[in-house]
Length: 392
Ligand code: PHB
Image (cartoon, rainbow, N blue to C red; front, side, top):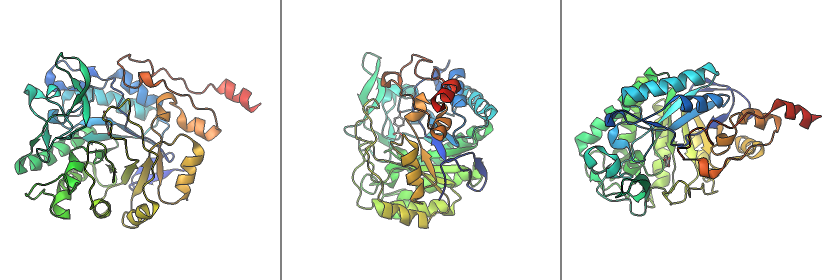
């Protein structure tokens, strides 16, 4: 059983300093690109933010668009333009300068989108034409102002477009590698495009990516994984899954367990380094309201998954102290623990957990604002002087 502060060789090739992961968190501090095709851009401030947190065993970046059609949420960066690549290069250089390891998370939002964010006001694309009724995204209202807006009815992707999308993910991974990322994580959770394909109820397609058989409904994920592993090499690709999650108006799927175990087994065969699991999110699309539901994945199911996957499991969802994290590692079911919110206000979270120093608490109103450094890069490391006083 691993200690939280023990090293790990992820995927047999990426050395991690400890078992603590900073998971993807949307912080909306991007800059606007000069051209609409630039997309939203990482910048110096974002580089500072990640660099401050480089003592994590693994940082997984906030989510990134693989192309313009994946932009389902305002102020989310991407990795499809030259300007975005330059921005991300600042980040990887800063993290590496501080001795950290960073993977990039990639997504396509699929039907969780809004035309106000898409080129020429086009409709979002989806696995089918079914709207994610009840889901909202941060997009432009009729007055042009950003606010939470109901998602729009998607246009179903053609078979050729799905195949082409595999190449789009591969190109995004190649771009991430070019600008210095140590690996990539595919967002196959929370009702975004990849999960839309995997859901046997939502995916009513009848082509080779259709929901009727296990192979067909997981084909998009597997083709993307193969293409991305070919870019990065085995051991440098992770996949985030949220079985039983309802986020993104995902319909309950009677085949969830079967699909999950099949996917995990296949990902292991394909050289995937880790599976990143998270608690179910509440159905509000509103990130201000999104809370992780305190529900563990069934341990018996996780044990079955572990038996068919040789890589690592990351567990994310509500962790905020050393004891519960260590107890979760002690189950032997997971290898790495992700701390989301605690990373907002504690850049030195690893040191604080290790020494038992108190954790700072962030002000929720600064999570997603454009108020620059406030609530973003202005959290100090724990003052060592006071640590010595505490110990005295
Ligand atoms: C998610 O992973 O569910 C997610 C990511 C980015 C957002 C909102 C939700 O802005």
